[in-house]
Picture 1 (cartoon, rainbow, N blue to C red):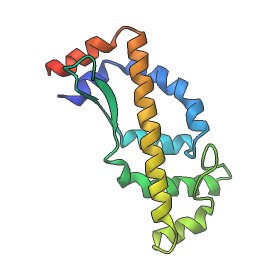
Picture 2 (picture 1 turned 90 degrees about the vertical axis):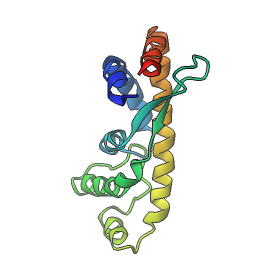
Picture 3 (picture 1 turned 120 degrees about the vertical axis):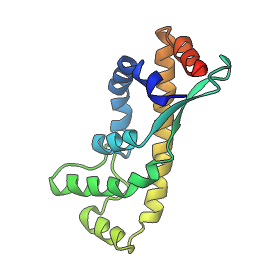
Picture 4 (picture 1 turned 30 degrees about the vertical axis):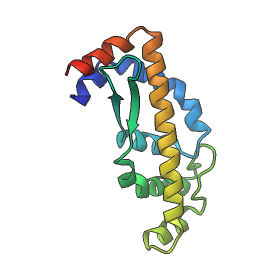
Length: 151
């Protein structure tokens, strides 16, 4: 299955879901910049595309682990510029000092990265569910699902 072909077909729905989902991100521990980075590392797939009853969009977050350290850097940069890092308050509230300690392996970034990973997985799957609901409400879900099943 070519991941790009079906995701290219739903750009309009993605833009709509992005706008609708922004309030959910504002309530989360992630800033909009952090969320953008998480979404860049997330791939959306359709599981069981051949079965209309079981088919669903899932968020593949395997690559998110690679960008978790960068989330702290973004948080520190936002703090240095006087902005708030996370939408609802970030788990790494120490800013620059905790980022430096974490980079040196002296902070508790292992725990915060695990928390960030779990939060990112949950949010990206919520996004996938909203995207599928949008496609269903627009009457496009079956054609998108079938295109993946045929490829």
